[in-house]
Length: 299
Image 1 (cartoon, rainbow, N blue to C red):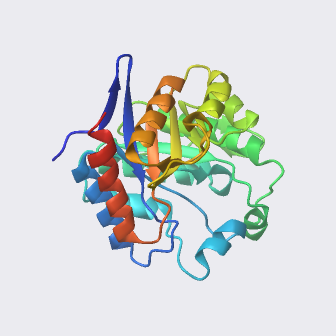
Image 2: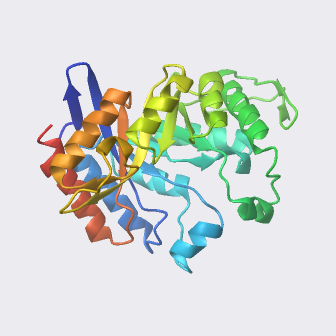
């Protein structure tokens, strides 16, 4: 098995992950599992899945009647056929989940995988989806803050006790606990509210489709915590007109991609999750392999 792919600069190592296209209308979950298994064999450090429950707004426009597979089911299947690759969520919409149920699901997955789970959470902006789920949209930030605190207590205390505005529990045993002594919770999103949540609640920041210049502007708001970023990757024969520090996607020939990746690393990003953003599994696999062969090997 190939060792993890890292980009080594004089002062930093940057890890690389891939987005498993559970959000692209792929009919077979087994095919998604194969993509993740291939990524581990190629040496990627992590694989990531996304979450939506209904085909809301932009999801409906992309998928039509094709499926969006459930994130934790896909990661559980991946866990059974991989040994090393980290298993991340990019991201779960935390207000849609009761913290006790999600804490149990994540702890069980962490045990199954041998301690490889990275829990990325966010608040989402699909107001129509919140309405269909019967979940209030306006207080989703406050619910998310409280749910993070509640899950930490569930994972840390044998008889957890929590009294909040939205969740209350006490007097009953909660098990299993995660295999990891502190299972990492990354906060997804690019807003001031997300960065405040990184500082106060999270173990790291999981940014979405930001240019290098935007990462530099915001990263101080993450209070020095680790930063990962998810970016759409598209190889192209010619480079976009914008300078590499102003591009929100990884797009261009390999030489331009190398320059852009180095710029992200110098801005403070320590993990880059590449997303082929395609329902074509052959194209996704080719993109992952080409990134390793033509870009990472040069670094």
